[in-house]
Image (tube, rainbow, N blue to C red):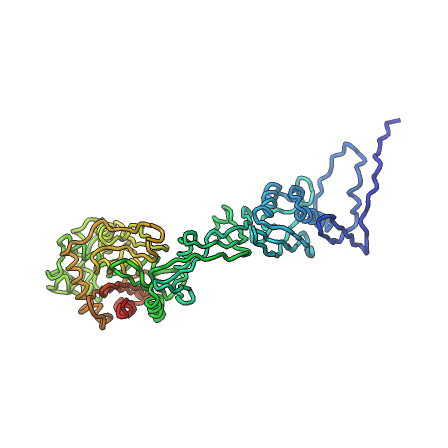
Length: 557
């Protein structure tokens, strides 16, 4: 007789009560109950193989309701009771699950977690989450819904939770984490020069400016950061340009105070002016100091006034004129060519309406904005001549302005041939915004470049940009004469009517591909005020941006 196989005696087990085909399972110590419908054959797992050397079969095929419910129940009860290793073992990515589930109470500061499953649909089990977010002395309840999906492991045949970070919270992408803590940047209370509070409700144009002030001075202004539960994005999410997301604010924090140079009266007037003209923007400066008194945009999203990058058209001729005068290529009262056409670098340039001025002076060409009067001097200039003039005298195109909020500081790249010629009239690669062009007029008015600023450098000790040199007194005198004559008798005269005192102005129109009308520009000064504006797709600067700028100059400081 062969040896009789000893069969181990089965131990008695307590089976769950069966009521009407439903099995009720209560997990002790977790305070959590799962109710699931079980199909037949649940006892089959207790059977042992009759043949010791038979190779186990890997189960395949669709998951049964029992398998889905059992895997979900094991995962959820283990997670809730803090048994991270056990919960992660039920998933198909133990490492990632362990990392995120461990961080859940530690980094997200979540406690008293209660997980309640909903009605299963196929292999998917929804569940609700109730927890308490507790950070230092602050606590708030958190509730949200999530779900998990159970899949069959192809190697073992076992049911497992298909692991993704979204199981823990639906707003999580793989690689993201949940973190509770100080929000990083305290809020700020921005004040105008008179001590009044600046709000977006009061000044709709300043929403992005207030954001910039918080980013720059939130940690320096004496405020206290709020406490938030956030989704902190991982590398993959950041590659997809997903931003960190606040899920719950525990405390808003205490704002610090930042005083600006803005004039409440001038800012209100600027807001009113741009409201009259779509796609308009304007900036007002004080030339003697560089203080920004107002900045407004008709559109309240992107801050064109400070960060726009647009071809300035003929307003750039202020900079070009200073260059030509310095190099003895032009003089205000001397005769200067203004032909209908001038060809350079393979391009044929012309004036608006193909006009020409026979026997006229450079002052006449500037006042009427003759393009060919400037293009005709291109053969006498080096490729970097205009770039150096813009940087060394007007402080432009060096990307070093420290205004107090983000700005674009103008761009005058070194170019050659036709592009270099086009840059002389504010086209080609030249790019500016109203802040830059207001600064150009301010430099002419005061005779010295003073970097515009919104927050005094005394607040944080930052260094303002400087120009390496100033214009000679002779050049400055002629440049002022050109702008004054244009304000009185040239293309700026209509807009500048009624603006009295020491004044100067220049108009501009910049052609833009795809636009039926050019962008209209206007830059001017009156005493210790300088301003510039642009109306995109507006047409001639004297008719569009001119009235906006002139109205603010009339108002005075």
